[in-house]
Each structure stands twice: as C-alpha cells, then as structure tokens.
Length: 225
Image (cartoon, rainbow, N blue to C red; front, side, top):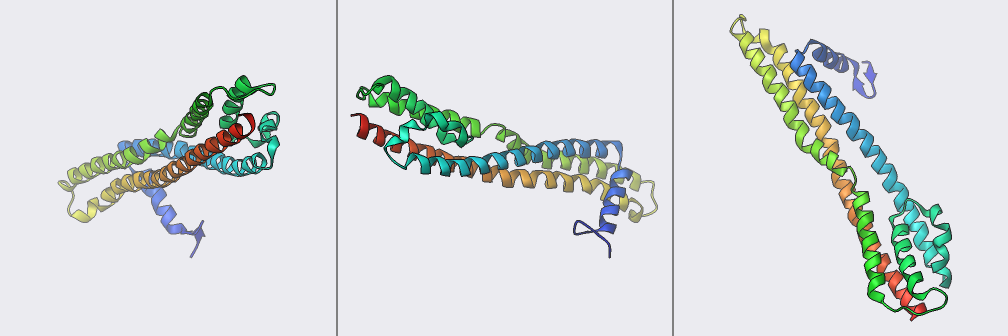
C-alpha cells in the first residue's frame, strides 16, 4: 500500500476529491480555515523558536551574572544574551542603580530600584504575550466555522434527498459536508495545545524575572548600601 508522509495514499486522494467536489460554500469555509491554519502555524513556529532562544540565553545570562562582583558590568555585553527577557530587567535596574549610586555613591531609594525592575518585568511579559490572542481566537472560532460548513452542506444534502431515490445517493454530499468539521478541528487542536504551552512558558519566564529582580536587589544593596 502506497503511503504519503505515513498516511495511506488512497485516503489522501479521497480527501482531495471531496474538497474538489464540495460546493462553493464548503470550499469557501475550507479556504478560511486554511488561512487560519497557515497564520497559526507561522505564529507557533516563530513563538516556539523565540522561547527556545530566550530560555537558552536566560540560562547563559544568569550564569554570567552570578560569576562574581563584576555582575553590574554586564551592561556592555547585553546584546549577546538577547532575546532573554532578563536582559531588559537588568537594563532597567542598572539604569536606576547608576542614577543613584553612580561614581561610587550609595543607594538612596531602594524602592525606586524595585519599581524599575517590576516595570521591566511587566513590559517583557506583555511582549512575550504578543499575538497569543490569535491562537486563542483560532482555537475558539475555527470549530464553529467548520461546523457552519457542515450544517450548510447537510442542508444541501437533505434538499437533494427529496429528489433522490435513496439516502445512499446523498451520502457523498454528507461526507463532503463533514470534511469542514474535520478541517475546523484540525485547525483548532494545535492552536489549543500550543497556546496552553506558551502560556505556561510565559508564566515560567515571569517567575524567573521576579526571582532575578530579587537577586539584583540583594546584590545591589550588598555592594552599594
């Protein structure tokens, strides 16, 4: 038996034939679902790659920050740790620290440093969440778009049943209608899976930024108080 990417070739051929034989409404629905799927997978791959790099670079940055008393001199080499969100938290904290204790001075307002670190962490969390709403929309909307195509196709099939000699004559029409539901689910399921995975990753980054902010404050107070 011939296979295409692990799927029986006759099955692929049947699906292609069903799409070709579908009505204009069903094909329109399938086109909309294809657009949703294409954009979603583009976003999924981009986010997955970004989070993978951010996680790796965060580990490298923390390792460099914890090496010794020269931790606050990392500002000149921050670019090599992008796109770690910890670099932006460090940058905000270092800017406030330099304003207060630059040139060998002492920290005058530790609350201001804490505030700067929190602002940076909040901005980075917002940036990490960018475009995730699209995945949530895809996960919630596409099953209903597919269902609309199915309902429309079944209505057409039952209208044809009044003129057909038997229900067997309209079975292909019902099969054509059901393919839109399958397409809707095939679009929604990956969006749900990766949306939940990315939300978990963002929470993990948020916790790491919070922990790093505390670590930054402790080191700053130890050296500049």
